[in-house]
Length: 63
Image (cartoon, rainbow, N blue to C red; front, top):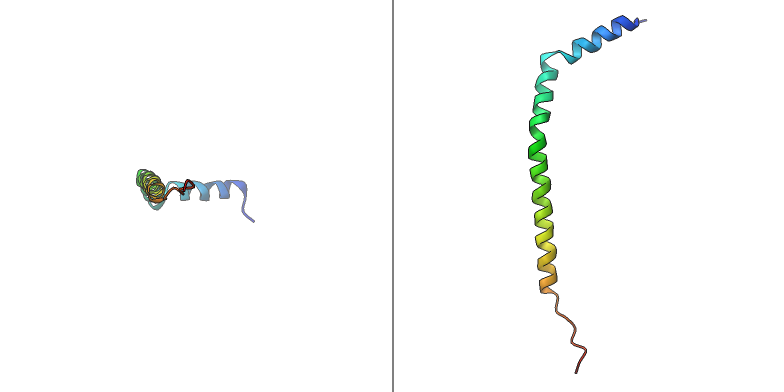
């Protein structure tokens, strides 16, 4: 059975490994891209809803 010290050493070894650092940096760099996609989707949905309102023909109840 692993002692607390062995478990802590394994966790530290994983955290400071080069693969973890590369993954962390890659994750940080992808955040602005994700926010950009989110903003683009918001703009496209807004434009689509405005165009939908423009195409709706009002009902003429006065005859």
